[in-house]
Image (cartoon, rainbow, N blue to C red):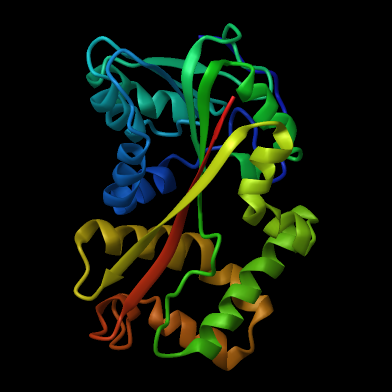
Length: 281
């Protein structure tokens, strides 16, 4: 296993940063749409594919299903906890696994047919540099496929647009304060197609998949929204950025023991976008 150089990205990522629980929850939650995105690439048996920033590795199996036993799937992630968590999936799908920094990948140039990378480029201080490094791993005529969730604001409280707007603004302010970022840093990834073109990729095209959930929710949906969003992204960190009344209302909506718990309301309707931008090297 190659030990990556310690480095700090836009959101403070290092080899010890651990998003494993949140990544598992998101992949279980969004699996139907993520698999549609993989299928849209029309991969063929025998291809060699890199999942750059593979996280806990669920996509390794989805990619392996597309390239078949004659193909090769390689997962790479900076974080030691993620690589450790991905071992089971990698073994089951006969995928290879590397620990490495995508800005200095431990791979030979022009060695893969496709790079697949989801919710990773937005963590880099220079997305174009990251893209160009990944492009160097791709054979002539191969592709880079970048996936990014939430280019549009997510919808959590369909019945209360005001509260939803305040919560989204509070989350952005929290990230600005914690990581000393401005609005352009937080929103620049929305120009994902432009990033591919700026990096020098050709024939760029984009497709957006809507992740839409309606009450009653699947177990995977409630687990992700409750643990990763309501508790893991919101919770007490929003308190300084909301009025006391608004904060109390959000906490009621996020509390499974309260009668107002949002995820069990009959009118709960969730929307999140997942955008896949693909370009040719």
